[in-house]
Length: 222
Ligand SMILES: *[C@@H]1O[C@H](CO)[C@@H](O)[C@H](O)[C@H]1NC(C)=O
Ligand SMILES: *[C@@H]1O[C@H](CO)[C@@H](O)[C@H](O)[C@H]1NC(C)=O
Image (cartoon, rainbow, N blue to C red; front, side, top):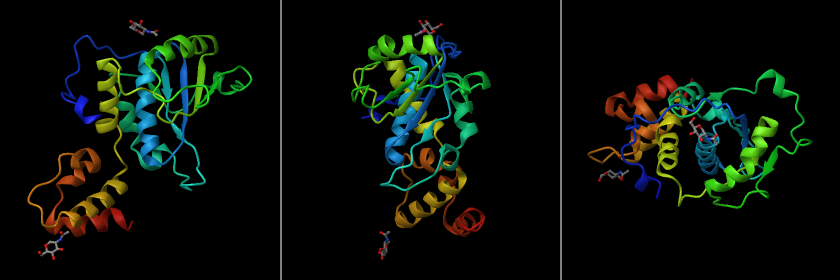
């Protein structure tokens, strides 16, 4: 369904100005496995744009199911993510010093999955989250599994979500190299590559045949 909405990925309207993120800071601790976390990241990117908020690099909740302690930079290229979305939203690596000591729980700025319905519409964020953000300068979403509707959602926000999912979130080179190797093995008899290969494994999508060994030497076992 996302793909359906994702044409013209690079055509950003001339009327589209970067958000300065002046309304405050959004923190998110995404739950679930890697797929749900990825959806949460792109949803929060859209919400940050909607609210003119600055996004702090997402963190991932440790789950007793997945037992994965990886954080954003272990899985995705953090600086690439920040730079790629510069035309859309402002992203920083951490809260400014003066906001770090706030007791977010005490001031009511912690918002969990209990407070937001699944597939919530943008209007909810404008009505209930924006005032909180303006008042406290920081809102921390904890959980945030599927908390933004797929439909209906304004076209420009949907396109931003697509840019996040298909372009801004690049796996780290080591993960890309491993994935490229798996793809090569599964497609050893195929005559052409898949349409999403480059989105998923970046430059490694092009490495084929006799270079296969090079992928493994350079990235897999170092
Ligand atoms: C965000 O900024 C844009 C451009 O300045 C403005 O049109 C919009 O009303 C702002 N929205 C919020 C929620 O502050
Ligand atoms: C590729 O083709 C060979 C020969 O027909 C076959 O043995 C092998 O299982 C195929 N590999 C894949 C991944 O389909």
